[in-house]
Image (cartoon, rainbow, N blue to C red; front, side, top):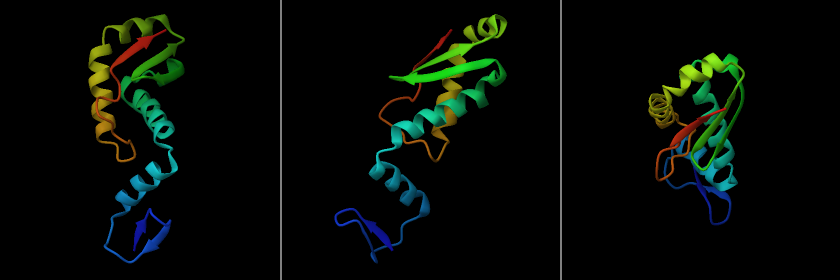
Length: 112
């Protein structure tokens, strides 16, 4: 069974993988931006190693804003921003639930 977008019904057409069905559902329900934002937050926690120092994370126009409660952690991460951007984009490229756009997911990181 395959999902037919024209009349919102399942039709017996061709076999479609579960991964494609999930992507179609995400695009149809228009939840890609919120899901991408959540996946970017998880990527920050996984890549940076500063999850316990992180107070707030927000993503606006491919810029990740991170508020930290430790000035020492902020100083160390400041010098690793370019490496962190590359690792985060690599992490998100390998994430099956992340809906990829035309460019990189994160272009820069601003530490507060």
